[in-house]
Amino acid sequence: MRRDLEPSGGIHPLLAGRFSPYRFDPSAAVDDHTLGLLLDAARWAPSAGNSQPWGFFVSRPGEADHERVVRHLAPSAARWATDAGLLIVTLTRRHVDDTELLYSEFSDYDLGQAIAHMTVQAQAMGLSVHQFRAFDLEALTKELDPNPGWAIVSMAALGRAAEEPPEGRGRRSAADLLSAPWAP
Image 1 (spheres, rainbow, N blue to C red):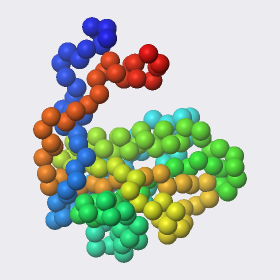
Image 2 (cartoon, one colour):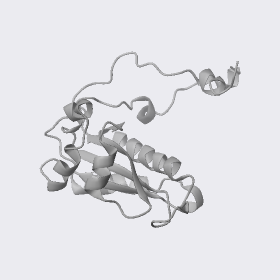
Image 3 (cartoon, one colour):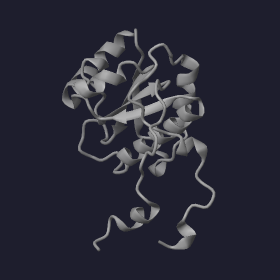
């Protein structure tokens, strides 16, 4: 790896401290003001042609919509995600209405940017996000019945972590990020 690509001063603490908890504090509610700030962070994410092809279905424990989402979680996710202050179903607009015409070929990428912005905002507010795909996609899609052209992609559990980040979390090296996609 080129020497000038080695980090010299470290990345921002919000990024370095981010982790995906497997335990959330069930008593830590996410209020409307906090939800508004999280959605505003997602709103400002970049997107192809400023199309902003993302949407969210949010639910909180104790709300009727929460059970609509929770019942479709895989057992592996249900063990920890149900305690989060907020469950977020992420959607992207892939097609124009009910046609096969692509709305944006970058919609999944753009949704990822919106969730990343939301994740950093949550971290800045002392909250954590665990993104996951351990749910019955077909059943949840039938349950929520998104508008034509929209597709559910993933979910995120958001709230106050009830655990500390694990020691020695490993990450791939910066050099590996440059060389991994290419044949040796």
